Structure formats: C-alpha cells, structure tokens
Length: 388
Image 1 (cartoon, rainbow, N blue to C red):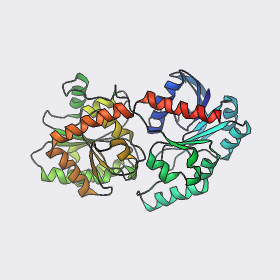
Image 2: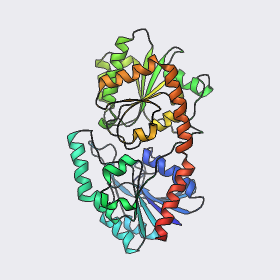
Image 3: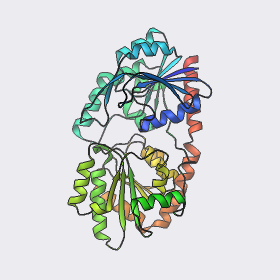
C-alpha cells in the first residue's frame, strides 16, 4: 500500500498531531511505502526531500503567515497539487481539516484515489464565544464538505466523532484512539539519575511537591484557572513547599507570569519551553501530580503521558478526557478555580488512594493505548477502504 500523509507540520515540529503521525507511520513504513507532504521548516523555508524513520518527507517551500489569534502559523504550501500527483499514492490521509481545500481534493480525486480524513480536533466548544462560533461556522462552510469528500473518516475519540461528524457521514467514520510509548513514559524512582538531574535544574528540594501542567499556552488549556487555584492552595497550606511547573509555548506566557507575580506566587511557578521530546519523561517523574485544566480537549496526549508515568492526575471532565482516563484520576469542572483547588487538595490529602488510581492508569495505558495496535488499526481501515 502506498500512503501519502498530508499535514502542514511534521517532525521535528513538536505538536500533538505531529507526534501521532510519527509514531503511527514509523511503524507502517516498515510494511508500506509512506510519503509525508509537509511545509518547509520556518527557519530554512526551502523545498527538500529527506527520510525520517523510514518515512519519505517532502517539504514544500512555504509562506508562513502569523496571526496572533492562532496558536500556530498558517502555512501556504507552494506546489501542493503537483506534489500530491507526483506521490501517486493509493490513499491520501489528511490530518488537518483547516488547511486543505478544493485544490487538494481536486488533485486527489482527479487521479481517482481514496481520501482518508482524521479528526485530531473536535468542533470547538466551551472555550469562548468567538472561538466556539468561529469553529462551528468553519465546519459548516468547509469542514463538513471535506468530510463529504472523504472515503473514510477517523476520530481520536468518541466525543470528537459525535460532536463533529454529521450523522449522514458516520457510516464511514471510526474511532482510533491515540497512543503513548509506555516504555519511555513509565514510573521512575526519584533517585533515578536523570530525575535527580531535572529536579536539581528546577531547584526542587527533597521535600517539595511539584504540580505539572503540559500544554500550549492558549485560553483553551485553562492555565489561567490553574494558576489562580494554585495560589489559593499555597495561601491555605503555608507549611508545604509547593511548586507549579508549566511546560509549553504560546501567546499567553507573559500574561500567565504577570498573573503569578500579581498573586505573589511567581517564585513558586516555573514555565519552560523547548523541552526536548526525549527529556519529557523525566519531567513527569520529577513531578508529584499532573493537572489538566483544559476547557476543551478532544484527546489529551499529556494526560496519557502522565498516566503512563503513573502520576496522580487531576483533569477537567471535558471532551475525550474521560475516554482516556476512565476512573483513574480526579475530575473537576472546566472554568472552575474552586474545582481545581478541590481536586488538587483531594490528591494532596489522599496520596495513597491517588497512587492506587495512578497504578491503574498506567495499566490502562499499556492495555489500550499501545502504538503498535493503533498503527494496525489505521492499516486495517485503510486496506478495507481500498478494497471497497
């Protein structure tokens, strides 16, 4: 099977969708011919062809448009239809419904080839009026047209499928959950050499308790509520050496740090960006708890990484998160400072039961979110689509 993957970004770009594509297609490339067509890296911006883990990566010269309201650049890839035709694949796999339009569809359908669409993001909801209405309008105007053209649709959670895919297209829609590398993301002792190194770099004492959050610094991720909840806990528990570690990049970084300063907790809050993917497991293990404060979350890779690392997790009950975590963490409401405060306090006061939930969470990740099984699910669905 010849597969052409279409996504505006690819490794070494660090994003959730890009991580999924690398994990899935590095496995499928062992049995199939896989080509990824993506945008040129912003710092080089020239066309190139390279191979990454058995995957042929074609990068197109790109105009990168930056809009402050968007969490990432808007890439306009030059020569995309020609690159699609040159790939000559059996099936084309679109992974971003916001950046592929009629020129892409026409190039694929002109060759009478199959089109697969994966929904990594659900229709926005519960974020803010502009984002929610804008996302709905986009899907009505174009997103659903793209689903109409697709021969097969996959979604990263049942919630994503039900909230985003109209009934008339669900006969060709399937759920394929994301995975997590449970060999890399696993529990390690606080005495582990690399964990000790990270804790030293972060300036953490042996008695400190560190709460971790990992996600883009945008309104969707709810860090503004987390920082306020953390400030309230610090004031109520003066005897504890509490620290908040937020890993991510985005337009809210300065706002969040100003907020921490105004609340008088900036000395307890650290924000890090640009962490190497190979280092991330040690940051989870250097922490004592993971908190996801998201307002909207189709399928949280960071929650899955925390569970695989056997960390106690507090998460807002939104989107596909309950499908990932089940009963193996503490849930709270979105947009709720008091809810986050209560959830975090629950873990702090009941570490034994939190540890038991964390152990079950890791077992769940091993059982249901193995990348090899997930890659085979894509393979099976694509082959079935081509046969039909």
